[in-house]
Length: 240
Image 1 (cartoon, one colour):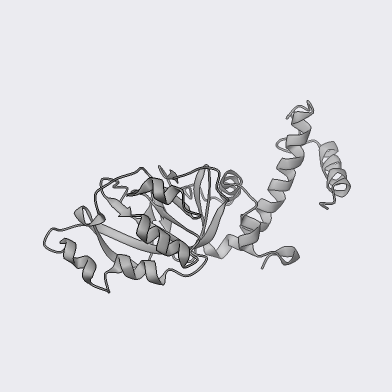
Image 2 (cartoon, rainbow, N blue to C red):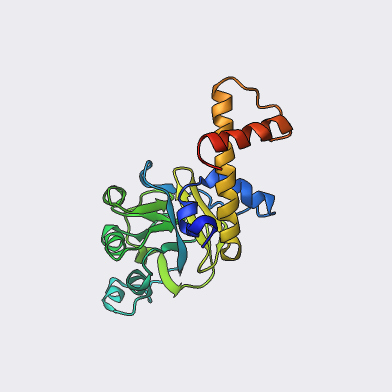
């Protein structure tokens, strides 16, 4: 829980990935934005959940015939059935979108089970169907071939790399129209609180800029007169 009774997840839903990126940069973390991954459909609510991971290695033909999907212990299928409610499944596909990381049936199963969303640095097949689900989904690009042609599921819920970012199970994953930020679990509460304050100040700044105020001394805040004005604005708008 964070201040005022809101959970970390609830607070992070109200801030942008851009604000999170700046907050983490202030803490010395410069590489928390998953590269070359975007939402299948923009305009959806902000995705927030803890990471549950799936890792692929390059497929080898003798180990990955189509029949392996008959095995109930196939790790891709196990991951879909075990990813906890409210979590985000993050897939390490080695930035290889030549074959699908998953398709619409698996994405629908995750959605029905209450999973928050799915992220891969590869691609999804049935991408138009996945995009239309009431479910957050992020990838590099659409792709038709089944994952077995290039990917072998080798491990679940262990540290992975996704889009050049280290993702550990339990890290907070936040996604919006700009993309995906990864927040280390140990500082997630702190980041949520700081980003809430930053977002409130940015709201004040935007109002000032829209009314014609110069950004000099305002953004960043170096003029104490604006600090006083910000406090008055919070009180006036019931946000103190």
